[in-house]
Length: 116
Image (cartoon, rainbow, N blue to C red; front, side, top):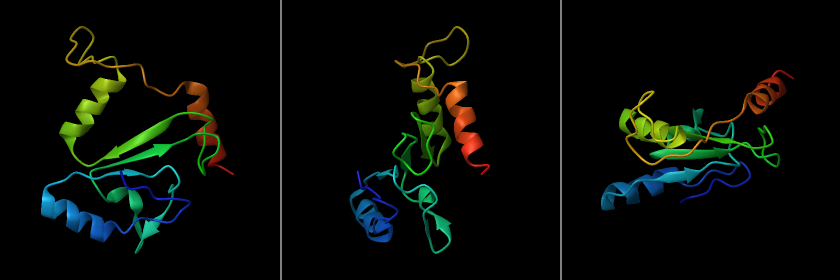
């Protein structure tokens, strides 16, 4: 898992070349890269997944929580199942899951801090 540290992005071009050569997926740790760009393109557009942390020590924070950025519908659906107890709808469980949603207070705090 390549890590973008303190706003300094990894060499995403070279990592993608290696991934393409060997058929690998890239999951970036972007916890310290909120708002980082390469040639005016968000760092979150690179790789297969990017994970963000909203912990109090990060640039964008809500005290706790985080986000996953993905680029395909199948992966998004699997993540949705995982964060919602594995439910596909009100009665159908399709996979193991957890309750991994940010509470309303944390979401409001994150939203409010971006207004200033």
